[in-house]
Length: 426
Image (cartoon, rainbow, N blue to C red; front, top):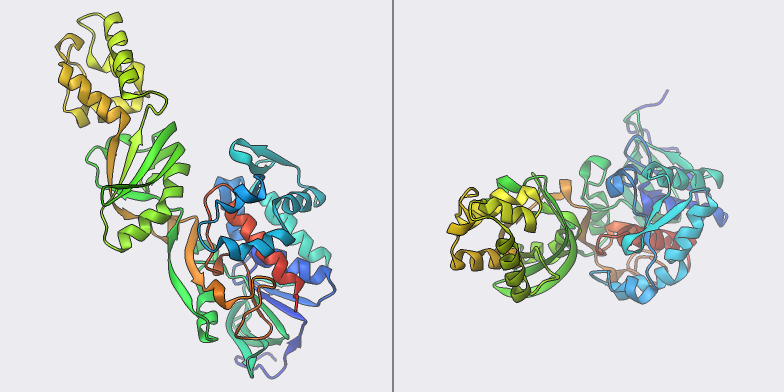
C-alpha cells in the first residue's frame, strides 16, 4: 500500500520537465521527439492553463515581423534570446502549428492567431505534440525539490495528486514554471525558489504589461472606454521617455490597451524608484494644434448660437468622452456655444492634444500579462539554456529574466527557449 513520504522507489527518465506551459510543453515534446524518455510534471489539473486564456482567449502565439524588428520588441536581454530564436524563430513556430493542423491568420501589427480564434487550439496542439512522442504527462503534481549531487542534476521530488511524496530520477531537468503573472493559472514563482536554492541569482521580479492606476479625478467617467489611433507619451519626472501609437483602454483594473501595456514596463520601474509618472494622451495625433484650432472654428461656424458645447465635442471625440472632458475643462456640457470664450477653446485644444493622467500605482501580478525579472540570464548558457552552475539543469520561458512587448513576442520567447532547452545540447 502507498504510504506518505515513501520515496524509496524512484522512476527513471532521461529528462524531467517542470511546468506544462508553453515553454514546458515545447521543451518536453522536442526532447521526446529526439528520443529521450520524458516526464512532464504540472501542478495544475491540466496543461497550458495560461495559454488557454492568453490573448483574451484567442492566443496571439507569435509575431511575423522580420528578425531585426522582432528583436527590437524584446525589452531586456535581447542578445541572450538570439541563439534560441535562430534555432526556432517565428516562422518555425508558424510552421509547427500549421503542421499540427492549426490554421493561422496574421492580423494588424503582424500578430499571428489561430484562424478559429480559439486559444485552446494552440494549447491542445502542444499537448498532442507531447503525447504523440510519448511524453508522460502527470498533472496535479507539485515539485518540491530539484535533487542534485556534486553540482549535477539527479532528479526531482514531488507530491502526486493523492498527496504522496515521490521522486523521479533523470540527468536532465528543465525548469519551465513561468513567472508569477496570472497566479490562478499556476504561475506562483516556484521556479525562482528552485533556482535560488541551487545558487542562481534572481533579478527582482515585478509586473510587466500590466494596467496602470491613475488618480485622475475624471477616471470614473471613462471606465470601459476604448480609444483607437491615439498617441500616448510616458513621462517620468516630467521628462518624455517613450511614445506609443495605437489603442488605449480604461477599466476597473486601470489604464490598459496595447499602448499603456507597452509603456507599463518603464512606468512600473519608475514607480518602484518613487519617481513621478504620468501618461499624456493625444486624442488627435493626426492634427497639429493649429490644424485643430482651425477645425474647431470651422465646426463652430457651422453651428447655431443656441447649440450646446456638447454638440461641438460630439463632432470631435467619441460620445463617452463628452462628460469627462467637460468636467476636465470645468465647462457645462449645455452651455451655449456662443458663450464659450476663446480661452476655453484654447484649453479644449490643450486637452485634446495632451490629456494628462498622473499614474499613482500599477495593477498586481493577477492582471499582468508577464513577469519582468527572473533567473539571471548571465548564469545560463544562451546556446543551450543549460545552467552555468548545475550540470543538467535547464531553464525555459518566463522563469528567465526575459520579457517583451505585447503582440506575440512573449509566447515566441517561450517557444524558442523551450525548443532549445529540449534539444539538450551539450
